[in-house]
Image (cartoon, rainbow, N blue to C red; front, top):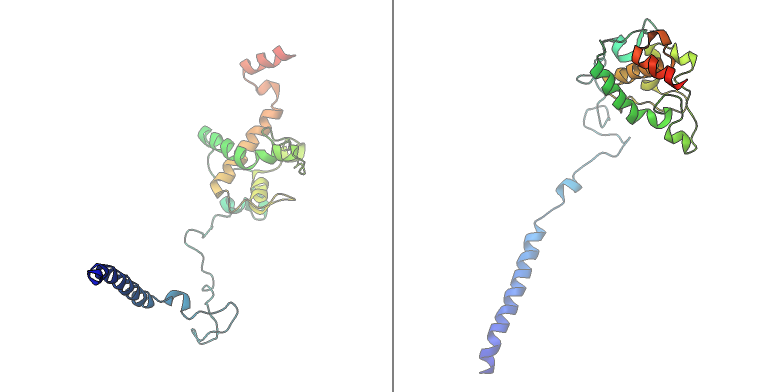
Amino acid sequence: MRPTKRLPSILRRAGLIGAMVLALVVLSGCTMTMRQQPRVDPYRPAPFFGNERSALPPVEDTVPYGEARLDAFLYTGQVDGQYVEAFPFEITQEDLEYGRQRYEIYCAPCHGFTGNGDGMIVQRGFRAPQSFNQDRLREAAPGYFFYAITNGFGAMPSYANRIPVRDRWLIIAYIKALQLSQHAPVEQLPPEDVAKLEATQ
């Protein structure tokens, strides 16, 4: 009777061993082909193109799709080496609102909500940027601001890879509106604003 009782246990053990052997056989067929494929180390010669280069440079005078940037006014803010005094497209009230949103995201942390250069970053001890409300920047052309946003200025880095071209112009439009709001002549104010101003005096 004892051998009969041990038989199922032996069969189960044999089955388990057989399953393990089968798993090993299956796993041995899995290779790391993609990982072990031939490759070229950086700056090492390669036989691919016949000139020992491992990669070909772009064809001369080619540009990425959608990056032709033929309109210098739009993409550089300059014409004939001079900063443009206007905007490359009409600015609507909706554009100004969108420009305000972009300004508050990208510019207000340093320049402040009124453009005086007193943003939260400055309040935390970082260097203060120039105020947009000084005479020099109030008189600066929109193209000047576009150049600064695109290429950076002083401690400010370039925002070309973070802010699309059109958004840069909308931010500038809002900056110009912000400057006007801080230095608007009284005679240009609507009556209700004049009344509010007189009430505070």
